[in-house]
Length: 171
Image 1 (tube, one colour):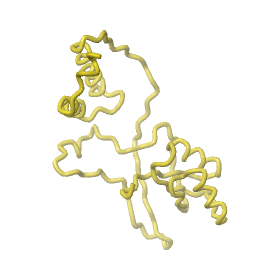
Image 2: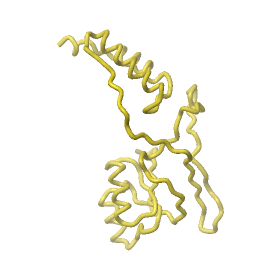
Image 3: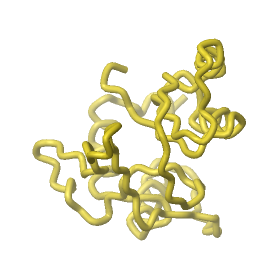
Image 4: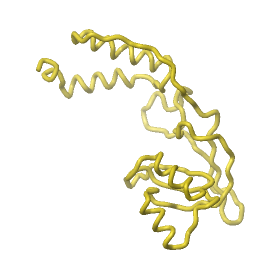
């Protein structure tokens, strides 16, 4: 009962500022500092707390690059580029890692692109009814509606050469 009485919007906001004060990708020294901070807060609240270190398989990309060409072979897009948000002091911080899908294999894929909406089973079925194959193609899908691993699995089942997921501002 005591624990449930503690939360407040103001306290949550202050703690969120502390927890997000610096970039802290999993496995980094900043991530460990965040764990130490949370453990100390738990101790201050009277909770028995300890940090147990363990080793996990972590991967990080060495390079992420996408280039888009039109039907005539003219380059029309290259990226990704860092997202810039006004007044963000960390937007160019080297500790910020470009978004990536962990444990994806490395590769260099050149292929046509097929848009598959959210990459749900229904979306792939809709493509099939229109006789649109994703075999040996790069499948472009939006985040949402199902787990990203399912999107990759469904594309792989259908022989796709690659998958690009993106966040649609409309969502």
